Image 1 (cartoon, rainbow, N blue to C red):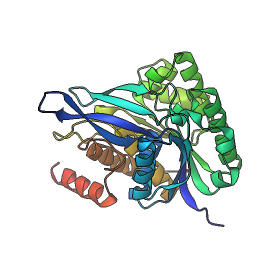
Image 2 (image 1 turned 90 degrees about the horizontal axis):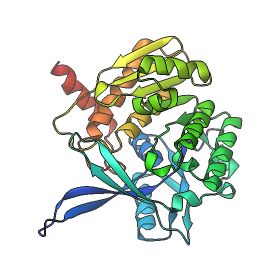
Image 3 (image 1 turned 30 degrees about the vertical axis):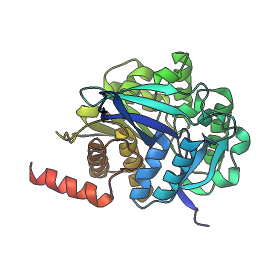
Image 4 (image 1 turned 90 degrees about the vertical axis):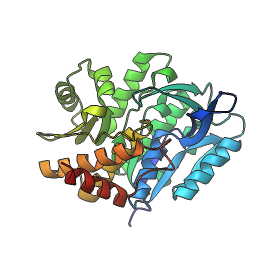
Length: 326
């Protein structure tokens, strides 16, 4: 029987408050942007024509309602988006630095996304997809960690493709060694890995991307395709004995980098869904990276991510213009 969904993602769904100018009184204006890495991934996958569903929890409050409505508007299934009666929706305040990078302050002590429990994970639902995507923000506390491990085990036993993006946010961890341990668990389970160069350094202790990637591949032979994002340095794919680099697409119009990594990761996952994850040739890996880099570049010209993901046509048109200007 054909799976109901292409991808189910599990994890945090929250509101990113991003800076959006000043008021007449010269106070910062903050814009409530729906966000959360796993759903950013799903939003981009939907733009690429895939069917997706989200497993998580929000508060029974105005922000939770906003998030549910947003997912429905984007075509992401919300049948397994639960509501906490007692704990409010998680909030993140994002400060944009001069180079477009960000600093985060989280209001999550606790937050509704942490309230998801093992009993909320229906095995048949997990099995109804081709791929299962996860990060480590759903592993910061015991109950939601148990739920995540349970879902990963169900997905693995059902033969789903497992996609992992650590999405390390140090402010959410009281113990960085525990964060490292949870990343290592995530690495030990996945088939497809998207990891930033900073996260790669955190796990391996080396700033050399190639050396770090080779170290991970040796340590975790289950990883069949590893993609390393390097911000303004581009990206690299590591697959079997192949390693491929693709340059970044830098733009003057970039205003912030929120969602760039999630957009990249979604494009890579989409490529794998369409072409498989075995025996990808160098030209295929480059094609994957090029499209993902272009999509990530486009999202940096927008505020927020979830609601403003680029279409496949927009990415292709952008690439066409870039190549014409080379």
